[in-house]
Image (cartoon, rainbow, N blue to C red; front, top):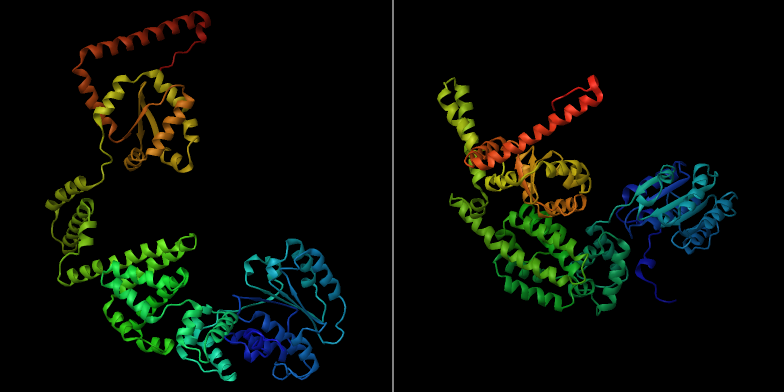
Length: 581
């Protein structure tokens, strides 16, 4: 007979053989023993966790005439025919290649007939999430009103793609990822059965690389057997999985901790030159940093779980602070996300290496300075003047509260606290008075009216975020070259003044609504406007000629208004009502 892969030869044939799914297998066995089986089941979970194997075992157990304690005998003709896939009453369908409505209708029609040989007719639909919407609708009626001797078992790795109407009509079992220790023990059992020597560390590496899937673990073990020369060693497992040895990871992290980016980069180049994959490198480094943290908190637990620890690993666990390990894990995780969307992963690995190596010395410097009772460099550089002022204010308020609680008078302290609050609080952006004066000097009523007429339409042309920032605004003055806008909130005013794309959008859209008009935008807070206006009045009094011209202009406007009213009264008589706006 031709060679068969290990995952086919060692496929589970009894519920007890299913690794890592004790709760599910026990529930199914009890249902068979108590004759309380459902008409439809949904098996979900990652690949290689035993979904299809459990479905076939269930089909054998429920039809086996010699079943004991819910387990099939695997010796009768019924069990053998189901195992070999020649039993007509147990139909296994791949929904990935049979996902149309016609295939499901054919199944539905056949389900109306009683089983010919078995007690129950069992339909196992693998990767059921691949069915089309029409196929799900065709299956829905059968699941809702099934025949007495028909059982559907749906298996999928992506249950979120299955309609809720299907899920609600099934008993759902979620298969979990298989633990590393369970996978390693099962691999050891297989190797003992086939009488092949191995190293415990090699099985741990294979179990980690499988990522919770027993089928993947058996496939990797198959490769390791072919690669090895009689004994499966740690080196064989490392080469087959592309994983890093502990010595590689210890050396790399040691250079990073000592602040030696050049040595760390050389170490990384050697690792990549051996053909290690970037994704595998990051996963192994994340696990290694996790192991360092675990060893710091629970060394015995990690020793039992991993089984082997180097002396360099133990030294690193004693030297590297936990906070630095947290930062390394964060950087490695970010790099892992970035590598997924690039074709040149080596660049991200080199950048991450430099970051890891430069984190070490800074961390140690901060720890030393804190132990000496002095303020650390990052803390000293990050504290701004505003933060210091707020700290002083909080201290003064705390002192005032303590005085009130102790019953001491604090009238003398009230005034300084209030004055300090006024000096340290936020007073809005700096008002450019000279520029405001220029706007007011050249401002005209016509320009202002034109801007106010199109202002609401102008806001609608902006994005949602930009429109929200300009919602509480009002044009104050407008001239041929400048526009002054008032803001209800000073902090928003400051943000808009620093937002160059928003200012450019305002100018461009204004030029479209008002031909040949793209003024310089100037922002001011409404709270600061009265003070600026008074300053401008004082400034204007020093220029009597300009004031006289302004008064003449206002007088001319008033004369024009009187003439208009007189003419209206002549035409309409008493119907005219004069209202001062």
